[in-house]
Length: 222
Length: 222
Image 1 (tube, each protein chain N blue to C red):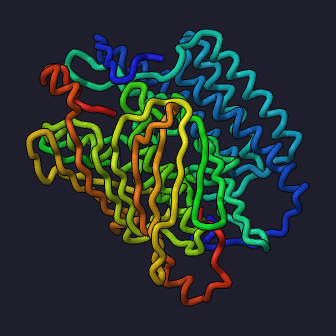
Image 2 (tube, rainbow over the protein chains, first blue to last red):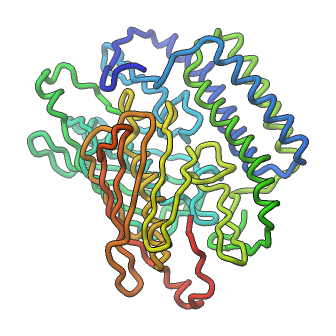
Image 3 (cartoon, one colour):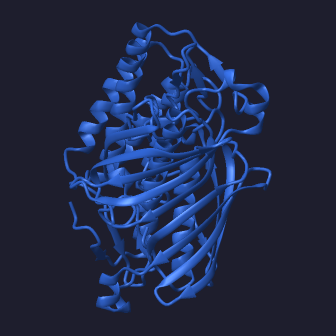
């Protein structure tokens, strides 16, 4: 496993980036669809068993040459995070919806995304923990966008209304920066635009980064 | 899509349950492994494209006969939740680790689980949002176990230390029950047993359930 906290610096051209997105993004998209299909399917058990065998065979092909452990996060010299393995935004991570987070450059992030059957908690509703999962990422990127990147110190989610599965959006704003802490507020909205949850978070620049100096801070921690 | 909040009552024998777990649980396990392999693989691009095509073909086979929308949650007459689609504990949900939550019967839950490369946030570490995702489920089931099932009202996570990906455990306790609110506290621990995050949550019995009467309350909301 790559050492925790280790950010590799990678020089990647825009063409390479776009090509990687095409190849690995297509595989992840296909796997997201396969995952949902596996939950929704009503095909017979013999067919399920045969498909399970085919899935295992594909896994074996992918595993003939691989890294061990976590994917890690690389940074471009410009500070762009290549966090393809991230559980919320990772291009190559089939469990990520994925959420494409837009940044305003002034401590403001927003995103539109779709939560399918894989994100269910109560029947037909987004899992409360998935709400927290996505808002944690939105708020963390917002803290980074506002100039104070950090790891989550405290996250509080207030659930106002159930969130029906489907199209959703989220938005976050930096509300205060105090020394090494950045305070952020964010909301989740359902397809109708109704606010269904509110999050407040405190993001803290870890001591080990402060000791090394600001030059090593990535633009994002996710 | 099944209507939000609708819990179907299903009579299922222990034999049927165990058989379903075997067939659909094996498919979900295979997909979890395929997902991680897709993130860790270093095989060539032609191979990736070919595997992507095979994944799409398997999806088409599963989709020849399927339900629309969310999987929903069924209840047995005994109150056991068949929440196979749940994003944290769902037997049939490939994005769920899955977490197998044990219940003490007196407002106490615990679980050991493994978080692989798919649950990454910062390099080598569990995503802060995944910590929240799992603790939300643990605390919600704990509230149900303590006699006061409900939907999450407020959830606060305090991150004490980074959580290294790998084996983890979680535990939760009901700390107070006040009318329609159940207060719960929980912790996440890493492989060494160190406490890395603490959660407090308030779970609330929704008005529409209170209006219908206690007989309709499921033993779990997840």
